[in-house]
Image (tube, rainbow over all chains, first blue to last red; front, side, top):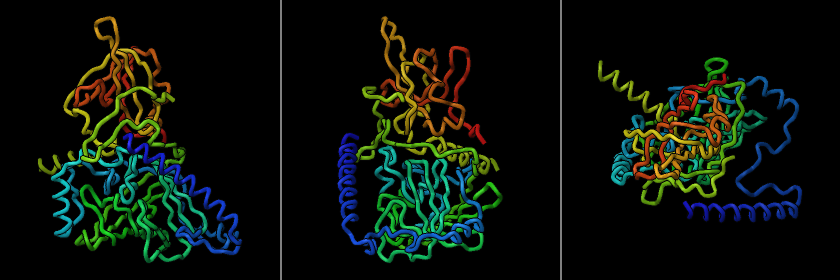
Length: 279
Length: 129
């Protein structure tokens, strides 16, 4: 826990230095220079009035949504948990079965979410908190309340990266098939899981199909493929309900996190009241 | 048939378990145990990832001992009728908890009864549409 905090401070400091550096680098760079980082903008050109008008023809995904009761929570670290949680869905290769057995033999009492590390994909889409969909030209943004996370699904025609960085949410591109948004995602952090005790391989790919089944109900069909881990595509369904009156709330996990899990997998709680924020 | 009903029930319970807590496991709590903590609210932390109720309980020797009770997040509770002033310092309260396994003075919130008999819970569907 303490160690986490120190690392957190170091990370924030590093980020602050990095942002200062990039700000000064940007100020010195010629205006016409294309960005050299992986985070290219959604379009090389500014959106036009026609681009904004075209959004009105897409299905209305905007607003705040939450998984409905029995709406298929689960999948990924932070959703199913504990040594006894055996995923029903994924069909595993012999190697992945052996790996799962090995991990179950060293029972973790908890996952890194107890230390405020977000679950990443696909678990972040199964949290008991709402998410907000935003549609802008060439981009679908999902603001996820749990752990204050954001996903970007680029719909501007760019290809998936050939050699993606490994990220908690991967890199997503999307396209519309009629009224269905189809998002493909590659490049995941090794800190994410397909299901409890099922780590993914480098070639994991996730395809999500988002569609409205009635005006305020969204269906998400999620298919995970991973040739190193799965012998068949692993498909799960989730159902979300739209809550027109809701707003996304703040969720700063580090605000007053008393839970922790240590390196050996042992969970605990800090009940020391000193320094407690009442808010 | 009975097995089917049982497995359906287990599935619902699992779904419910995941629903009420996605941040951490229940490993630190004795989920079969139950204890009632009665005293006076010292402080109510309306914070993420969990709310915490600090309750001063008479120790029988003229002093108090403070119990720490973990609850759902303000985000979850705020959509179910709770607010930061649902519990205030000085409120008399009786809280049923799943006690800490290690015997320390804490546990997980199950339900609370206020001095006027009002019962507070942290489960159920959102109260806002």
